[in-house]
Image (cartoon, rainbow over all chains, first blue to last red; front, side, top):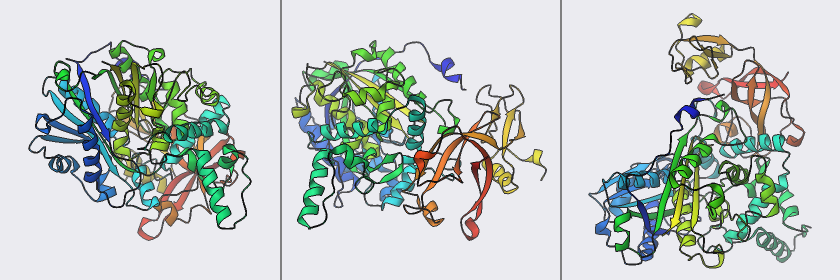
Length: 429
Length: 140
């Protein structure tokens, strides 16, 4: 219906100068009643500092770009960027908060890249933070829903899981995908998350199922008769419906967490490490409410952001060795793998069923566990994806290391239902 | 106020709903139709718009049955024991919009078929000052 996108897809553009990632860190993701946003960001910064091979004197940092969705509503704290800057001893340097819903820190990364590429700064701290668990679930549901259209979508009764559930019904109707395909995404991402000590759920779904069985046995309650994970996931009591067809294990959790990245001008990278990771492609696009789109089975902004990033990087989807994609819901990962060109439209669900996207498959997706298992502190998720790529491209991902010394990785971060999407491509130095 | 004097605002859209009218806006320059109404045509950027009443007939594009409800819907009596359907409806005139879908069984969502014909309903929801008419659809 909308043809504007074509007119606005410009020819290939590049950065004014190269940008390197020379350090990265994240807090543990989970529910931490004792930690405020600033405490979480400090934890991420500590790991970042330790990750800079030749050391980081924080005095070298010239600016902060911080992704944060809604500290205002989650923590009663607006104006978060200077608070974090002060906490890290970075004032009076410029500190800027970026809000683009769940894509906040992916966009903060892009702003950091632009700031360095422009020549304004040489050394920039980028990150994201969200402290979500202080509110009860129904209030978190309200806050997340404000990422949609408060005048036309929310009054209809849409929730965030509801939006993606609607996309799932459209996808299933169009392509005939079984619900098992969604479950396979959750099972796979939990298997990856089980290998990530930073993950909120570092347990497989089978382990979660077995823990529930053991608990029932210990308490002398009747034992459920789940034969395997799929039966567990189909059980209304074990895996209740949130917004049909999405159940609890189709949804990323409510999380606290932070992630931090250190970007420097390419010519200064060697001051910090002999093994930098270069940011070779960056793309971003926007869109209107879900009901305004001509298609519900793909996210236009994701396709356009990917096109821009691939063109800048001079690589195509088949060359990408691994990707961290925005699996806020299981259906979102399936759609993402199509929007990014890894699989043709309507084929992403088959790839999920066949295990093509698992850690040892030909196209590993979300080796970190993704938003599903690692956790989704919304404003931190985009930066946390890049923390995983930093480790993977440097061969430091431990038990979940993608084999074959991957040289190209991609991060796909979506805000809302795809009103914002930002894609970055990274190359091992 | 006469229909044609109203600005193409959200308030005007909801005022029309109070009058049981589903109103969009049409671009006088390129003829495209928008629901919700817009003051500026995003296709040709013209600001010459006119009100256009919709037939209220459409088809279900996508839907969900919400079991974990936001506070406004909890206050309206919905929740895990009383889920509700919400969806996207493509009007026969072309545009699509988000709305609560009545008359379908949210406890048997697997039986709901995409593409079924729907017609507009004007739903009163909320208490006291917050009580107002919301856009909804039901099977035609």
